[in-house]
Image 1 (cartoon, helix red, strand yellow):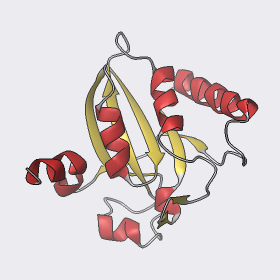
Image 2: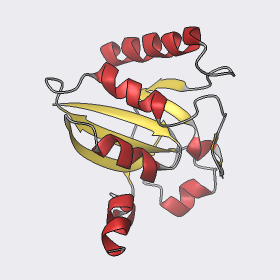
Image 3: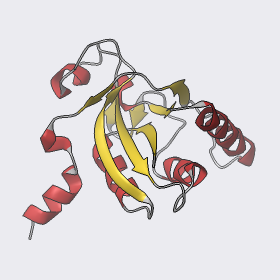
Length: 154
């Protein structure tokens, strides 16, 4: 098993997209990249903690490669909007890849370079590539939020 961590806007939709990927065995939403110890959702929403809303993914590399996960990452958000995804604005909604080892760093940088060279995006990519830092699990009501809401609708 391996881990990957991505920030691509509000973590609810990011988690939903990655939960559908064959080979992803677990997803946990949380906060990473900031200075506050054990921040709450309310803390992160102020934009003063420096954290991004992130998704930590456990995956089976025999079933899905890290490169395939990077492809999903580029598909599900706009990596050209600084500190914003759709109507969500603030540093907590930034685009970032938090790598867990040198191989992930190299793969993330190569993937970003391919995206930039492809001209797929009309503006420069602003995605941050950084080493993992302390990961703080989000409150339980945020975990699998989209799935829980869908279940309550029926």
